[in-house]
Length: 72
Image (cartoon, rainbow, N blue to C red):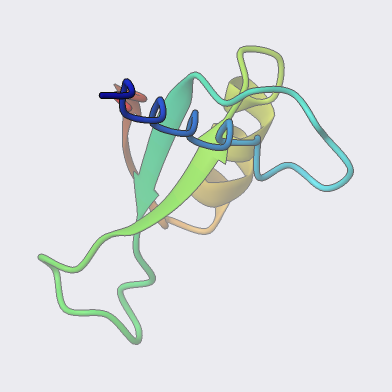
């Protein structure tokens, strides 16, 4: 009897910042109150470097809701 094949490793989750290829460490939860219901959440992924700038970008538009750790 042969051993079963190992499960493939999941693809790393990559930061949503334009051009960034770093592995994401955070989930930035947001919504656009003009088009989304209050309970609806959209998610951007962020590396440690880009989490502050993505959060600031969304905050200026009143879209930012919270940042959570990325749990895979």
